[in-house]
Image 1: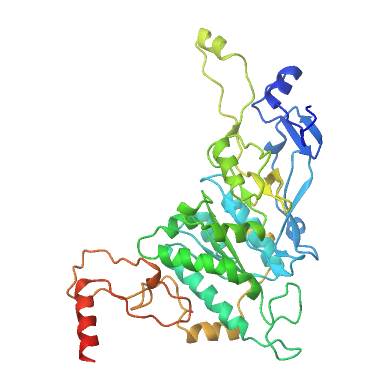
Image 2: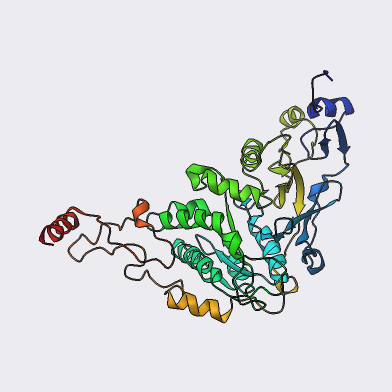
Length: 422
């Protein structure tokens, strides 16, 4: 090793060739810690094992930590339902392509939050079986961009409501403190699956992106954590730099398979302050079975794809180090009730009354209400033309009143005439 080198540089492919073993069957791993390293070789892919989730593993300890998975060496990996060191809630960031294990991770993380007495809302872009199942065990769940926009707006309003809620010991409002029995409300966790898809919705995307970013910045002070998920952590997909920085600093991001090792590595780097040695997640575990040339000469079919690596993820710890783990498995084909508490955690009656006063607490599956998300089209406008809401002027924070926005030449002329006559 050269003298100026701060950390070892290991060519795992050359190591595997020296050991006479295959390098691409997920049996050889390297762990680097400072100027020390550990190379582990297994007979079978260690992350192909399934680790069932249990209530014991998911129950957070006094510091808000619980076991969310295991490493290649069998070490438990922990994440947090709140930040004990910062005396604040925790955000969340979960990335991965379809069928990579995101919803499975949702289940165990929501169960841990619920076991800690926290309230959970889940919004998705489209309805599916697993998220609908999760809806039975949490406070609220919906499956379209409108529902997501309404949930974020209600969460924004809760920041205002909680800022005025007196604590019983002195009658004064205080910032949220996790674990403090005097706190008059529970931590709220707002999930937004396929956030970047929803942020590009032609009708509600602007509201989703703006309120999501605001909640990421301001929510922690009022006991609200934001948990977006999707397939990209980059700005052009809805994640602004400010949002990503806040998520990174106040969560342990989890990155499942992103479709290719390069994409997974790039996504992990996007969540790390100083990316280095990001582990590779293969598409599948595939042991080498003979020679491809021999199979071609004998007219034999290639071997099967192997075992899917769904559930294998890179988790970025507090020190910025990326660790490869197999997340706990929640079986949606059985009763998830064994993982969740017996009673669903809800908002307080006071919070619900205040949201209702603001017109924000109702069935969020209803059609848009007049003026709810900007001005409605006039009767003489073409009904076939889609309604657009673009630009910062069209966005309002929860609880604030809308201002009339000029969206057509006719409205501009009427506005000028009113100003002239006045």
